[in-house]
Image (cartoon, rainbow, N blue to C red):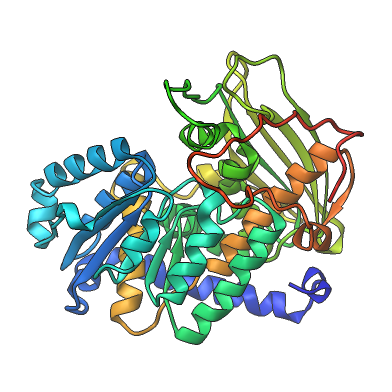
Length: 436
């Protein structure tokens, strides 16, 4: 992550060769799924940290991904999601797919943990495979602890919300390498066969040298949660986590990371600078201080630029996707279309494995084969790409990669407790908000 990493070099060519080989292997694994399922006999004992909708969904995905999988521990800050998740997974365990694989949900009161320290209970349980699916502000702490505990890790994206958090994650990545731990991230496009084959063609030169790109996540207004009677400030902000930067990083980080990850994947590196804008239209109470639109110009090595745009405003034109421009044409990545020609028929796409399941299949196969995947650095870089865009929009300043990475802005509340008072944040104002 030094300045040298921001410069193009021969290593980029090597990276693309490696990425192409990895993509080919992943596609081959999907084409021969029964063989992947048959590999290894070690029981995967799963502990889930964060029992909301995405965490519960991820637990269902891992139960559908490979044989010899058990859910053995759950943890959440709140009782409600913990109870609902336990009930839903117990019911899901009776589905045909789970029964065919011989998988199960084995949960007792003693291995269901509640509170801010619930993750510690899950990590001290018999689980050898943990899913990290809490609000992203907790992710650096949980990744650090899970790596220290020597667990196989599936981490949802993003993996942090600020520079100090990303530095902690990168340190955990190095420790995971030393321990030979497997870590896969919830940037599921990297496990989606159609994306893998499309990007392989791009890396093989289908549109020549890349000279530009565009990425969009424009949609309607997302959810908010009203404060419940008796909730402290801290409890309410965690409950309504999407409204607070210290928990979600704003939607450019929490959601648009998917598209920015595709740009980084295509270019084989991260941007060196971001210049952007954003703000918010009048919003109902309950949306904290986050913006509802961003537009960022990302500069990649060799002067290549990519436009990023994301918006959450009801009644506007919507689009989610990525485009690449090369010296020999253009690729609409999420449509799997190169120079006007689609790579797959709808019938073919319908036969592809659900990438939310495939990412767990790939992680488990890597563990059982003794060749652990480790995607933590890649997702950390994509997370920081989004963070630097947010920083530029909030401040109105050009933000370099090193500025974002070495930022001193630590958004996590010091000495956080569930009953503590936390003031409502002010809306950042470009030209007035300072870069820290």
